[in-house]
Length: 392
Ligand code: PLP
Image (cartoon, rainbow, N blue to C red; front, side, top):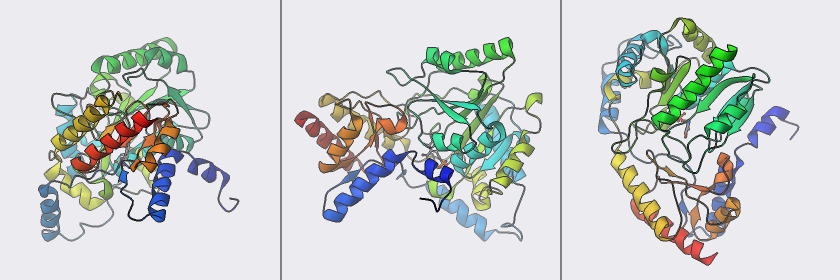
């Protein structure tokens, strides 16, 4: 333990639930390599990137000019930033230019770079539970404090609790909609109410709270769903997206930060360049940047995710397990049949299903299933969960 820095050891222990479930599964497989285990614990998207992605990579390599693999502007290739700015200006209904788009190593890299320019010792960063567990170490990295705001039974932020939790030390709100683990999309009304709270605070006290919207699932929303634009609604907001889920490029590590043009944020691109440099990112993978104008509007088959979600929660509902219907992605967050969600998920391992307790996402009494398996396995897992529920 002494070999590594104390802070490193502390942060390594955060987010232990996913790892613990994974290890329980590994132990079971070690004892019985033939065990029929359905792993719904890890959120590794299984749908292959659309054909255009591979074609674009091949074509770009064939047409390579000299110098195409060198260092570049840390913010990313200007022509790619310009392309994304044009797309986002329309979709987000905001003024976005090549100088307000910064390419990142996935959404995770974007969050790191952005938090670093705002957070310092003892600052507070608000997150809504259930939350992506990595937010906690990301915030602690900068010696700031994560402050958790509750959600209601529909997994939408509880705005009374938000009012209570905002303090003089609040620097940022880091929100995630559509959400991991719940798949819930915060409504336009909720977003507007959050913005109103922040604007009133600014008018009353002068305190300027940054709203960071982490949206890796916003382009895999289900039929008839629409993600409200954060940039249209709040001056001090920052959009973070990636291509990990919508075009299935999680391993290729490409995403971006975008914000709207405004005097108050002049210089942000240079701040981010410095932040990315000091964190050692230097820039986002250049070949992946180059494919973006060719694949930006491609998608994995979102219908498949929607079918899996409907099937899974339908079978659970027949077994008496309630789930708030997700609006996007491949995660579901059903209610645990017993209050002790850790005990429930541990018992489930013996029945051949790996899920993650809601406690790992700051929300006990639930469990998360990642539906990144073929539909037959998902149906089978749901049946096993229902059967197990009847036994306990
Ligand atoms: N934010 C949330 C809410 C996520 O669920 C994930 C990945 O699972 C990330 C960020 C990181 O995504 P990326 O692969 O784009 O870095």
